Length: 359
Image 1 (tube, rainbow, N blue to C red):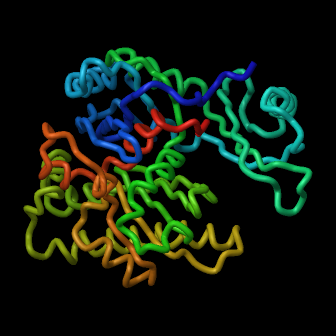
Image 2 (cartoon, one colour):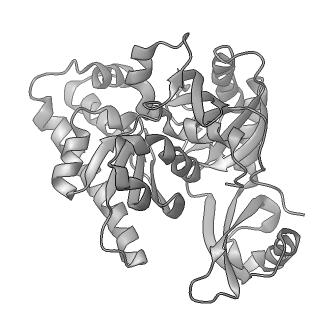
C-alpha cells in the first residue's frame, strides 16, 4: 500500500508552517458559511535547525513548536504541516476514467517507478482525481504528489516533540492555493473567474501557485527569499545577522539604504516573479495573468505591490487572509494586521479541517 502523504477531511486542527526563519500557526473555526480566526502565533526558528526547507535538528524545531503549542487552545491537539522544495514532486498523469480510487492506487503503484525519480521505498505518495481530460474524454487527469518519506517523518517527529498530533502532511504550494479563496475579496469582483498568481516570498523559498476558478493550474518553488536582503544589509552596514534582521523590520537604516540595498533587492525580486509568471505562460499557452497576490515575510517591504503593478502591468495586492473574516476577541488586531501576509501557508493548512481535498 502507498505510504500516505495526505489524508482526507480531519477534525479541527491548527495549520503550522515550519519555515527556515520562523514557525507560523493559524487556527480557524467554521460557523455556517464563514470562518473565524481563533488563534495565531509566530515564533522565530533556531538558527541552523532548518536548511533548504529540510529539518536538520528535530529537537530544536520541536522546542519552537512547543512554544507555539502554548499559544493554541489546549483542546486542539491535531496539526497540519507541509513539505516543499526539491524533494517534492507533483505531476498530472492521465488514467482511465472508469477506474475507482482503489484501482487508481493499484495502477499508480505499478507505474510509480517510471513516474517518481526516487526509490519507492523512500517515498510517500498520494493522488487526487481532477477533471476529465479535454483532449481524451476516456482519460481523467490525476494529480500525483510525492515527497521523500524522511522529510515527512521529520516533520511528524518535530510536531510530536512539540506536543501536537500530526493529522495531515500537505504540500506548501497547494496550501497556498487553498488560502487564495480567503483573499478574493481584496481583488475585483471578476477575480473568481480569472487567472490569479499567488506568490509567497519567504526567507529562502518563493512559492508560486497559479489558480483559476478554484483550480490549481501550475506550481513552482524557487530558491529566493528575504534572506538575500538581510545579507545585503549585513555586508553593507557591518551588522551581525540578528542586527540586520532587526534593521530590516524596523527600517532603522541609513538614508542611502534605498539605493544601496533596497533597490537591488527589489530588482531581483521583480526578476524572480517575472520569470515564474513567464514560465507558466510559456508552458500553458496562456497570454497573461490577471491578478497577483503577494504574501510571505518579504511582502511586508513597503511599496512591493506598487512596484509589481507598475513593472509587470498586473494588478497586485498584499495578501490579507483575514480581511473578510471574523476574529476572536482575544486576538491583538494591530499585531494581526502587521503579520497577516506571513500567515498564508499556515491559513491554507488550517483550512484542511474543513475540506475533503487530498491536497
